[in-house]
Image 1 (cartoon, rainbow, N blue to C red):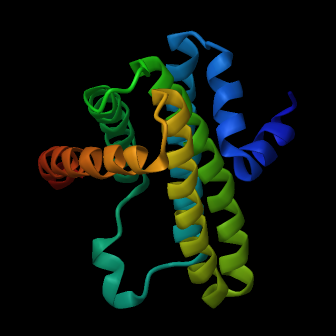
Image 2: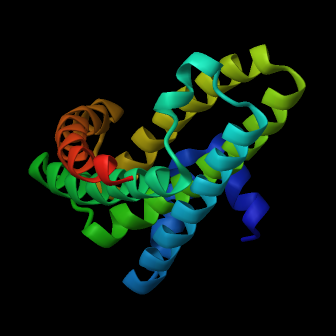
Image 3: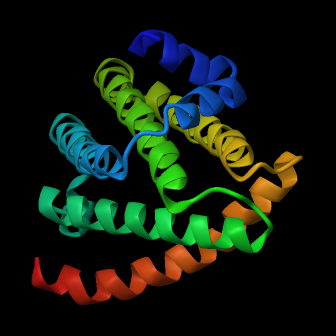
Length: 186
C-alpha cells in the first residue's frame, strides 16, 4: 500500500489502517528508528511554527527552545509507549510494547504532517489555525482510540478511552518529574 493511501485509510477507516499497520509486524529496530524520525520531524514543525507565528512579546520568556521541545516530546512519547502498553495489558489487552510503539510512531507521523499543514494555515489565516488545531487534536484522539482498540484486541472504544485516560495520568506525572529536572538546564 502506498504511503498516501495509508494516510487516507488512517483518517477514513482507522481500524482497517491499524490492522494493516500491525499486520506488517515491523521489527523493533524499525519502530525505534521511526521514533527518532518523528521526534525530529515534530521538533522541526514546532520550530518552524514558532518562527513563522511567534509568541506575543509578553510570552517570549516561556518559549521552549527546539532542543527542549525535542527532549520533552521524546520523553512524552517514550513514556506513552511504555505506559500505554502496560495499562492496556492491565485492562486485558493483547498488544506488545512493539505494537504500541508502531502505532504511536505512525500517529505521530500523521500529527507532524497535520502540524506542517497548520503552519501554512497559521501564516495565511491565523485565527483559522486555532480552530483547525482543535479539529486535528480531536481527530488525533479518535484515531488513537481506534488504533489502541485494534492493537489491544478490545471489543469497544470505551475500553481504549479508559486506557488513554489512565495512561495519561501516569505519563503526565512522569513528564512533570523529568521536565523539572531537565528544563532548568536549558
